[in-house]
Image 1 (tube, chains in turn green, brown):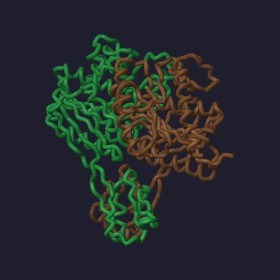
Image 2: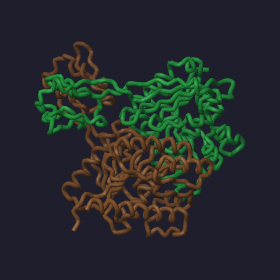
Image 3: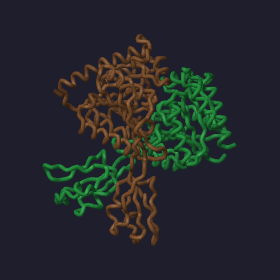
Image 4: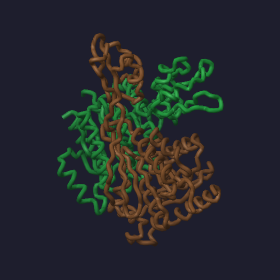
Length: 306
Length: 311
């Protein structure tokens, strides 16, 4: 079967992206037609490895990534002219003036590494250098599915770039060459890390829940997905959640005519499984939630390969 | 006679869906109940949800402009200097043709405009989001919204913060307390808001996932040298709780309070009626209500101490 790269996103956080990804990986693992690989692109808070830990800790491959560029100041070259401040070289306000020493100070967190200071300074008193932005970790998980994830270095301010790098890294692995399904667990939100996650995907799963925030955020996520013209399906988690908002939610989904891949009932097996750091499908394969996810998996296969 | 900077409390959490917005909204409401002038700022610009939980509407929409280069072809000599110096490669230059901007990649550094020797690039703007300011049941709300498909969320957060700076500068006594709600994660949007805070409240849950993400956000908080106290939400989830609490204690992580699973919380969330707003008549003996009352008492102690120190 032709290889497909798919992603799970949600807009709102905590609606079940990682739980679902882990269960789908588990099911795919036992499907003779499928060779699966998973990638966690929630580089600010990568959690998939908790459910899919390494089979052999000594075989964890970790690679430092130097994708972030940061300015550094060369005091020997500075002639204290203050032009960098007066002409506002830095649009990110990462340059401040140290009155005492009459030199600029670089605010490391604010610096975007754009290089404006380097180019504009007549004395060439700034340099741009790559710094460590995070790590990309890959290993064979306990269930036999290869897992790759990116993890930002705090304060590196380039989550989106690390997402792209993690995707690139995964696609170069021999496990990817051998696979026919790559499932990406995406970050929450709709900003730069999400855009980096979904660009170039074959299919997107958007997961939501019948609460005002769940709906509001998935609509925003779908707006982004539509900009990229990628086909998507919706999964409604906790679909039977008793709430005053229930009807409005289900009416909305029905009205839009979006492809609903499946509905997962509110089932305490899921939080229980999570508290034991297991995929629900592994923890309680007969639970209502697990049965619903099995159905979703079948629907997904149909959508991906007709 | 008041003449002081308002105290700023920032609710954050690392992991998504732990209850950040729930806590930020209810803390703001409880502070308002006590007669404080409270400003709630929703800095989760990718998915701003506070107004939904407050059951309010967004008003006073203001565009957030962002730099985009405007090329004046009559002046351009096709030298390619702009493209050579554009770090995110947002300008495409093919020999002997005019440069082509790729705005999705533009970081807004304006270097192209600043270095063009022919003055053929002018600073223009595009809208990347909006800010709103509104009042819902006596609570002032500032909210930022990123336009879907735009990536520069931090610029929307910065727009919110610069409006805040304006207010504080022109009218320092307008608000007693500012409550900030952040996005999940530990990226630049979150950092910008954490950096403004006197106290940071990370909201977590007693699972391995909650713990891992809590540790990451605390590392960031320590990098910024800020004071913090944790709220443990869904504290009645038992599977991992005891070990979780033990590890927090061993790491000297102080807890502001915990919140059990509670139906009133789910209902208030879905109805857009904050649990702690007295007009909403939720059961005052309910698990959620009691938990928030305790959290408020602990928070009040911290605020009183802070005020004594500031005086």
